[in-house]
Image: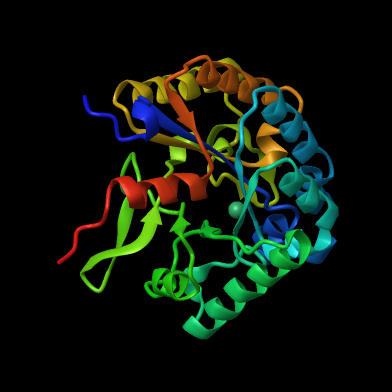
Length: 284
Ligand SMILES: [Zn+2]
C-alpha cells in the first residue's frame, strides 16, 4: 500500500489492547463443571489479573511510553475500582466488555441494553468517563448488538475479524458511523499461552507454546502489518501477557513497535476518530 492511511503520513498503526476479564470469565466457564462453586483455584487464575498483572503491564507501557486500551466487564470494575482508577490515571482508555462477560448472542435486546448501560454506569462512576469503545465478550455478538451500540453513542467496536484495518459496520445495508477495529485470533494471547484444565481453555489445547516461537509469531505479524501499512490490534489479557516470563514477550513487542518512528501507536478511540475524519463512510 503506497499512500499512508494514518496521521502525518505514518506507515502503519498499532493498538495494544488488554481484556481485563478477572475471575468472572472463569466463573462463567466453569459453570457447567460439577461442583463449579467449589472451583476456587480456577477463579484465582482470573483474580491474578487485576491483583498483580495489571500493574506489571502499566509499568511496561510506561517504560515504552505507550497508551493502551483496556476492555473491562462492569463486574470486574465494580470489584476492583482502584485498579480501574490506576489504569485511567496512567492515561489509558477503558472500554465496555459486558457486565459479567455475557454471551451477547444468547441475550434478548432488552438484556443486552441493560448490560451495556450497567457497565457504562460502573465505569463512569469510577473514572468519571463513559466508555466510547466496546469489545464483545465470549463469542459472537447478537444481530442487534451494533444497533444498540450506535443507539448508546459508542464510537467504535473492536470485536470482529473482517479486515486488517478499521471499517464501518454495515447497518440496514449501509455503512454506519460505528467504526470496527478488528483483531485476529493469532494476535490473542489465549491461543498459545493460556492453560487451564477446569474447563479446558483454550478448548483442545493441552500445552502452552514455546515462548520464543510465540514472540517470533507476534513480531512477524507486526512486520506484516507494518510493511503493508495496516492496523494491528494486539489482543491480550493481563493474567496471561502480564505475568512474569510472558511479559518479556510483551516487552519485546513493545521494543520492536516503538523502534519505528513511522508507526502510529494509538488507543481505540483515537483510531476510530481519526478514521471517521480521514476516511469518511460512503454516503448513499
Ligand atoms: Zn474477555
